[in-house]
Image (cartoon, rainbow, N blue to C red; front, side, top):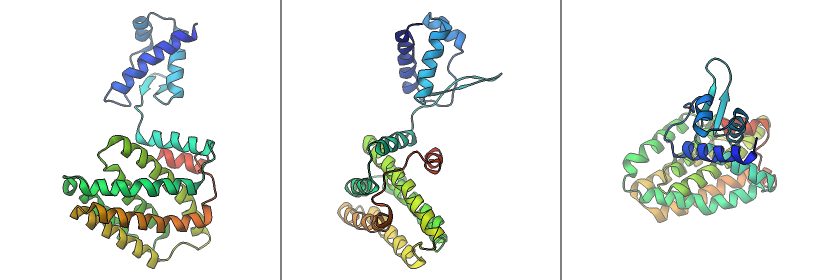
Length: 255
């Protein structure tokens, strides 16, 4: 079996997967692929192993087995970026600084959306209502408040920026969850008054977005992010981004 044959088949299948609009659908049967490419069984199986290692397919065994397609998602990009950050020894403080440069810009772009009242504002309002219901309930409020930031960056129309910043927000959120679990366990979680202050700031950010005030939302988003980051950085700023612990892996899988 020539490795180049397997790589050539994998390259062709990879392009077909990435061009497809569908995910979790089966590839053609292995016998059909062998006939289509005119190769041996071992060469095709090696090509499938390459794609499985890349996360583009899952090979299922048994009666209803086969190779099933998984198009890359923003969450897989987030996990890959987090692994790279951990491998490079990137500290949480470094991640925080990058978000301070990028997330306020995303907030401004949201305020500039012509269709923001239909495409974004209702989701942010729903998140605010959900967050208000769990004020004073430590970890639940943190999770809901993080959702506000994700909704905002996920609504940026520039796809490249959305993919990058949403990935970074997810990585930060997973590091922040470690902080929340730690301070909850030691009864050091910020009290309800601090949570209410955070909630009111989110409400003000929403108002700026509704009004189309890009400059105002940029300034408020930056100051809010800086304040919320400071609480986490005080304890974990010097730590390296975690993508490999069991808790982190499970968190990325749940995105």
